[in-house]
Length: 144
Image 1 (cartoon, rainbow, N blue to C red):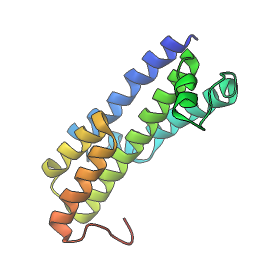
Image 2 (cartoon, helix red, strand yellow; image 1 turned 60 degrees about the horizontal axis):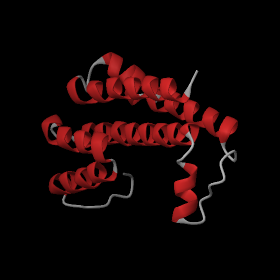
Image 3 (cartoon, rainbow, N blue to C red; image 1 turned 45 degrees about the vertical axis):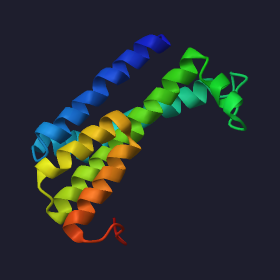
Image 4 (cartoon, rainbow, N blue to C red; image 1 turned 180 degrees about the horizontal axis):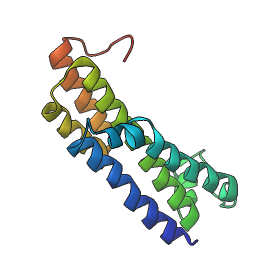
């Protein structure tokens, strides 16, 4: 498989998980394949495989901005980086939904947080913390 094909495949799978989180949060299938961690875990497995096969084959590094930029000049490196984002953002989305259900936050209040996490990662997480704080009156919690 070529990097652009793997990129397209992963980029097609992740939105399915997001749609289930937004539109069918309590559906059994959502719980089985997304909230259980299966989707983020599959993406993590793809990421781990890419790292095992291709990490260190670029002249880039994590020591400077220029070094990181060189890491992302290789198609496999970019694909790995994108799958990293997909896996972590979806994991955060599953946590947001699970946590919001645990504290009894209305799903409509959670949807903007999920959408922001899907598109902008940390901004969605920040938004969720603020929305959650409006209900719980605490920004941070000991047990998430």
